[in-house]
Image (cartoon, rainbow, N blue to C red; front, side, top):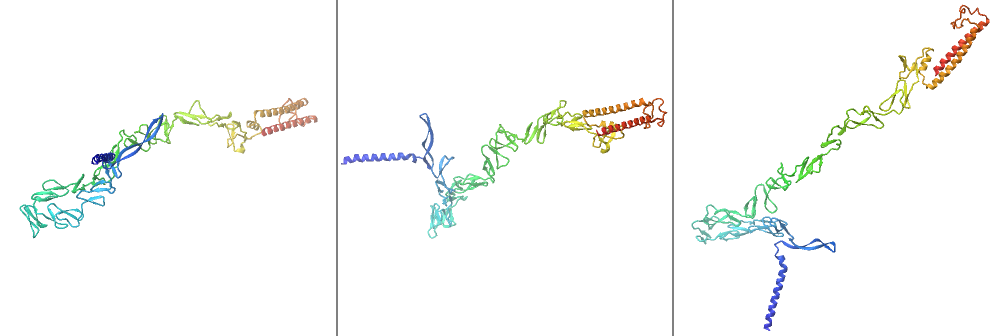
Length: 548
């Protein structure tokens, strides 16, 4: 039985060793990771071809990342714990766990400060609130006081608890039972532990034999006034992690505060006239624009971008036939001039009844035609013949004096009596005040001439009337002629009853009317009646012509 137990026990031990090794092997990957680093599995979308088709799938990939409550410090390239309340003067060793230096104590779980003792510690150091720890070579006398421990060369007086000092020592003024070594010069931030021998206080480093300075882990841009207590220099202040950083009274635009009241510029920016402003840098100069960000121009008001990103061209609301040389500033091309903000064509002569559409080129208005002899003058043809008148440029027939426009031509005005229109005559022509023709009635003999001169009937009607009058006159003259012929046959010599000589025949003027016989008197009376009838017919002719 004892022989069987040994192999069984051996196998059991080997099995346990294997199990332990397996467990350690599985957990080694997590334990070997740095502090604050945790493994995690992420889904990574991937694509592959399967059966000639593109198939998307998700592959789980393991990677390391900072654990919850930790952040990645790029400068130290490590995961650092995060203390939500801060860890001023100490070190955040775990999430929301602040560890203070040995000379400081943690307050409110966020700030490391020197401990506070209500009663001062004598020959001791306040290591915790209301807790004193004796300096080296001192022994406690009570909660706050420590008495010196007599070293060789010293002795204590048991009755007074004072040490009797040897050479190089002096009585402690605070404890007459203790002897203090004498150091000349006095120790600074140190304790004189032997004649002319100083020992630095806790948290201080020795500078020379008699002076010690406080030690701070990080006190750039400041003075270490106590162990791990940094007082920032003028122009600096502590940031959230307790470091002294420069202070600028104004925010640094496009930069950061590099020194007190002095900004450092971000990449792509350079100092401006304003010490708190960093201006963007454009490698290619902006034309009619300002550089608003690195290598990016923004056009000034009145300008717009072009194909060349650094050049902005002026904008004109209307610059046809010209070149835009500035915002809404148009420079007209040759042959054009600026009128009411528009480059209009210039013609050497004004366009009459037309508009200037190109340099020295007129375009006629609607219904107007260009004059072949002068291209700057346009005219409209008269719709009619415009006889006895003149056609003006607007196609209006301007009739001559004594004519009026009717149906596109000029017809002669009917003369009126000058007495009815206050007319006047000059050089044989009579005109009314309203410039119409008129005539004056002076005698029966001139009436027909004046009347005929003012007839407004057409030539056909006038010809017909004249022909009718001629026929009447011919009939009358024929009748008169036949009667005279008859008288000449009967009595060749007689006196006209109207008192005038109608015609003479030899030996007739001396014969009186009373000398005639009865038959001759009847003939003479008949001739007189014929003459009176002829005068009456002439008066009727004159009257009919006036009516015409």
